[in-house]
Image 1: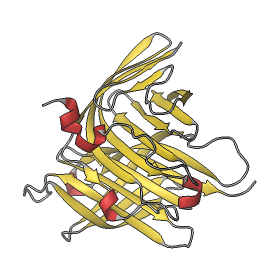
Image 2: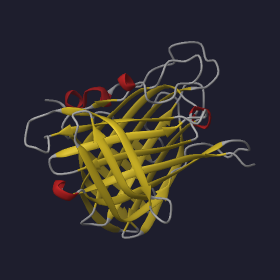
Image 3: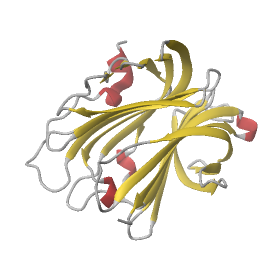
Length: 297
């Protein structure tokens, strides 16, 4: 089976804008997070391309507590920039003067279709974003100033397309992707501009009581924040009636530039790489994105 066939909707080709531009731009986004606890490496590759707005590619990696990052403009209808190249059906590469990255990913379990959950707040007058996620086994290496560190870890791939303007779609969110030996978990919790909350996601993989269940929706989730406002404990309720409590260990992380320099509401996002202890479920790893719209200017 080809990698594209394995990744299914995560390998969906980039779309030309399907209608006359109006309001918020159409964007195709691709994202790969990864965390290798043994080698103290975590990071993300994130690309956003648009036929009607500036595009951007970003690669951020923390190696032994040191952050390396490159952010570059991206042309329309491509996920290949001057230094960053993300293949929807293949590897991701970064080649810069003092920073190189090579990542291959293979899918774990099944894809999570967020579109059917009607979860992400849509822009007025536009259809909701099409949104898929799936856990990944990630391997490769990162090289900083001539020193190469292997990467053998886990993470998540994300693929979205549609009209989007994060500063107008919500006030705050938490996006969570965790990998354990026998299952993965992905969820998103939003605070809407009207003060309401939305939460949803999926558990993919083997059921914790031993039955073979491919995917199960999440019906609720509650976050206990650490003293720094990051993840302390996550409590999750599944559609089948089970509950999981995951406590986060010490974390490393990095800011995630999502917008442009501007006055007015702006999204501030921080990505946190953590280990998890889920009681009888064992230990896992997660990459957690904390986003909030800052309104002072």
